[in-house]
Length: 537
Image 1: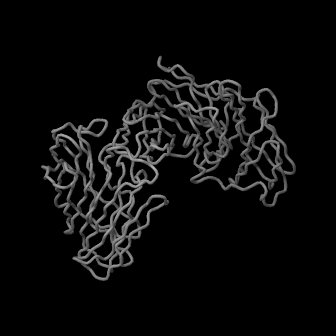
Image 2 (image 1 turned 135 degrees about the horizontal axis):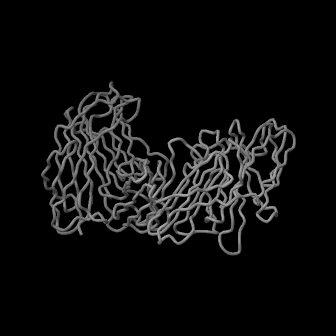
Image 3 (image 1 turned 45 degrees about the horizontal axis):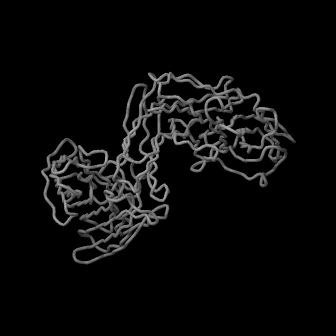
């Protein structure tokens, strides 16, 4: 499959469940794309002809990168591209279809000095098969699937200046080129009961591309995907290469498992830094949630488990703050997977109310659905004193049907703190994280049992423009409800290092709501409630 310019393209010629796709970073921070018609000060031209593995011309799209500036253009093979004089990298994937199977891909590049009219040929007949091997277990019966690309080596993000494709081992080729202006990177995946993934990059395109790998030299990343908390039941887990210094393997992508939660799976990887990811598919087939948790750097023999969908989902970061004589709050990341982080939170609709004593300063209903960022809440205040900010948030995603019995469907916050319009500062309040132990893969506790819930209280800086002062927890209390919040029972809470343990007595059926109250050293309180925190079953 061809993916010129590092943009991901899926073609209908192949859609296996455990396929590999190429995902680049050009959409986020890519090269400067200049249309061919607008080339400035053009004093030359370049025409690139591409030949297939049988010598016939094959139509392709050529990515042309200025070796000095990184300016990037694309042009159809055989078409004349006007260019200023200079040195360029001409890159492409020569894809040839077949009546059966996946056809072939041949990745090639040339370094071209343009002065006047210049014509070059990329000939797939010169391509060498990318050979990879693994001391594979018996359950791996198919050839490796390989995703590969050639990149501009001297750019800060080589993978953003690239052309590539993917195919089965034996059907993917690369044309050797020793230029140090080029990098070649690939990701190979073998699929059996587990997945095995290897990445490698070289300077230039080697005369014998590929490599040999041993399972004993791999690390292991396990995916544990639970059910009940997400907006859909179908999960597509994947893994992307994330080297600490960007190179031609950055963001090369391996599908791990696409299945209905709950499930667990393991992928064995070459040592290095990896980005786990999860896409949640709703009942209408749309990707509606998911995210990118922290990258993981693994050494040979190391193992790490990445969880998705563990109970309890709760607010992740944003605190109220005083700025420009207003109490401000960003109503975002209010219901999210703590194992993923702020950027994996689900869209919500919330009502935010600021009061002082019996006076309502401002009430506003907001949502971050359908926009790149949520609208902020800002309420002008005129005097110092104790204020109360409440937030009542529900998950909100029009156009889909939430799974029956979805957990963490509603969260409320109730903060009381002192504020002064003359002082810009983050309120000294807290958010809490609930982590119940002993739940099954569907986030259920046993009927009439006792669940130990680890409770942690935290707060973080809201940005460089607002002062962040230290605040400590004086006391923490926890309650549980088995009737949707109508009645509450206090849980026994004990300090355990930097967190607390709450013993929650579970009902015979239904779900449990959890509530915490933090009293801070500044005299304020923070009350957080998660409804349907976990289920009973």
